[in-house]
Length: 514
Image 1 (cartoon, rainbow, N blue to C red):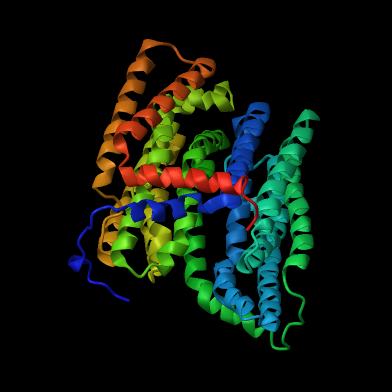
Image 2 (cartoon, helix red, strand yellow):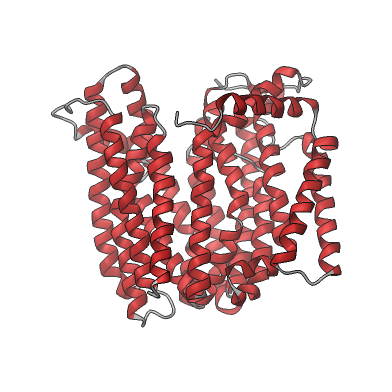
């Protein structure tokens, strides 16, 4: 239903507002917890590789990982979204023949493409455009990442199939927890044995294989037993017809977003790739809140018919994304050189890279879950346009600056891309949703964030900080921020929502797979 946004007026907050927010906040459950674990595992893997093997090895590992993810995105091409769109209604209607047909169709399509993509990548690697390509060990390590493409595709598709029938256990236990734990443990064994980047790549792929095997075992018990229809191949084209806009947007966005890494490797060095990758990993924790709140809000955004409720809920989500993530980005930016030493002493020179990336992410949080909201509200093609303009700008600027500025040039280019995204998303939110992503309730939190930044800047100049002293300081600063936020910056309905969340979590205990 199309609503004239100019006819909408704000209504006073009510106790029901807090209860609506309470239903959004705790919705992640086990998926959110497992997402945190997965992100922590990836960060730990980066730290282990960086501290033991150095920035060059981290650069090679990052290029291999990004190549793997790009090929996985190309292989899946949005069909996981098609699974939800087509398979979920069939399961709800107990049409198990159709469920079996779509399951076989999506596995056949994605596996075929993934094998072809991985094979092509293996033969392409000797021509891989990055500095240091004369290292045979680096080339073999990149080739090993190709082995993980079909495995990761199977793992992702199986977890999506289970989610489509209402079971998150495969995504939580296999794709995120088991996969992460296996990769960390195997990497630890490899590094303890004194092995190099080839063994690191092999251990990463082996972890995916373990998780994929577990996912296959679990899905056999989750999906209904039925024979597919004789014409099940028709489901392949049905899936692609629905999914291709999202698949094209995802692949284009991911390739352009990570073009700075490939350009850095080609125009500068793998050391610069390692610096950029290390800084990016340090911002990962703050981005978790965007992913968590965005995924929780997607279903509500898709189904909400009341425009005023949608506006209030969306702006609440944006506020909470900023409240939870932006303090971390502030502290990362102010104390960037010290935080970079988490990866090793040689990474301290990348402090300016981290500072720029942290500022970019701070700006990015202010549009909240706009991408997923526009997609589920009937505007999925905007994602492709935004990716081309935003990440295209970043790639172009990286190509101009990487050879002279290295990782810092790529970080500045990323900041420019985020500013393009911000302008596009604010405009699209006003035009297609009828409101801005943020509301007046952000004023007090922004003042508080400014005070946090000022305090951090003053303290930075008073003492020569290291990790041992900085971590307690940041804990104290964050505790003060939370106290002031609670006492002065949150309206009553938000406080009611938090209390309701606490009650829900106590009733549920540790969230189980739903």
